[in-house]
Length: 477
Image 1 (cartoon, rainbow, N blue to C red):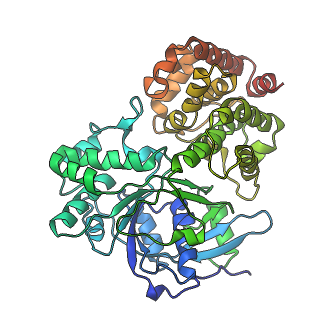
Image 2 (cartoon, rainbow, N blue to C red; image 1 turned 120 degrees about the vertical axis):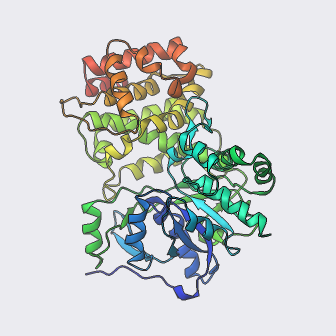
C-alpha cells in the first residue's frame, strides 16, 4: 500500500499568521496546499492557518480535523497516477459558536495579519437584481442590531477590527478566496456595509484603513463522498472522514496589497499582479461559463460525470462552439496568456476521468452562478451585435433542467437554494417563456431584449418538443 506523504517540515516550528473562515474542500486543496509547499521550503513559518467557521455544519468539519491534528488529506487525481499528501498548514481550528466569540478573539490576536475566506459565491449577501451588497438581508440586519454577537463572517470581521483598533493593533488584510468577479471589492462592500448598520464612523475607518486585495483562484475539487473516502483508504487513511480530491492543475493570482505583510507565496507559483481582473474574467467566462454550458445538457441526458459529458460528441461540440463564437471573442487580453491555449487546457481539465466530478455539482445553484458566469457574456455579445444562439440555449437548458425531470422522465431532485421558486417558473415557461425571463434578479433588462427573448423561446421550445440531443444536433451542425 502506497502511503500518503507527510509535511516536509517540523509543524512545531509553525506559528499562526492567518485566520481562514470556511474549511471546505477548495480551501484545503488550494490555499492550504500552496502554504504547505512554502513551509516545505523553510519559508514563512509564521504564516500558519487557524481554521474557523460560522455555520453549524462547520462544527463537524472542526471535529473531524481536530481529531487528526488539523491535517488534511489531499489526493491529486493525475491520469498518470494518483498521489496523496497530508497538508499541515493549519495548526488549529477555533470552536464554532453562534456568537462567533472564539473567532473574534482569534482574529483580534496581534500575530494575525490576514483573514481569508471561502464562504461560497452565494455567501456574500449580494442582491442579484442590483449586483450589490444587500444590507436588508435578515442575517446582516441582525448583526447590525447585535454587533457584539454577530452571526455572520462579516459581522465577526467588523467586531475583530473594532477590537484591534481599540487596542492599538493594526488591522489585518481581508482576502477573499471565493470565485467571484472582483472578490476583494465584494468582500469590502460586505464588511463595510455590515459595519455601517451599527457604526457609520467605523465603517468609514475600515474604508480608509483595511486592505481587500482582489484574487483569482482555480482548482477543480469534487465533493467528498464514499468514493473519495475509499480512495483515501488505499493510501492508508481509512479513518479520515474528510479527504479532498482535486485535479493536478491549480492557479492563484492576487493583487499585492498586504500592508501587514504576507507569506512569500510567489516562491511556490502564486502570481502577484495588478491585472487580476484580466485573469479573473478569462477564468470566470471560459472555465465557469464552460462548466455551466456542459452542466445542464449532461444533466438532462442522464449523464452522471463531467468527463462522460465531455466524451459525448454533441456536448463537447456544443461547448467548443459556444466558447469560440460567443464567449472567447469578448474576453480581453491577459498578460502572458494565449486565450486559445487556455481554452484547450480547460477542455483537457474537464475531460480528466480521474476527477470524476459530477454533472449534478455543476448544475448546483444556477440562480447564483448564471448571473455571474453566463449573463455577462450574453450582454457583451448582444452589445457587439454578435451571435447569441448558443448562450441563449445555455440559459434555456438551465430553465428546462429546473422543471425537475430529465429527458427520460427521471426526477431531478432539488438542486438550487431557490428551487421552490425556480421549478414553478420553469414549468410555466414551457408555454410562456417570459415567465422565466421575468426573473429580474437574474436577467435584469435582458428580459426586454427582443433578440434574446426570441432566441431563448426558440431554444426552450426545441428542448421541450425535440429533446436535448436533437437540439444540440441542430445547433452544432
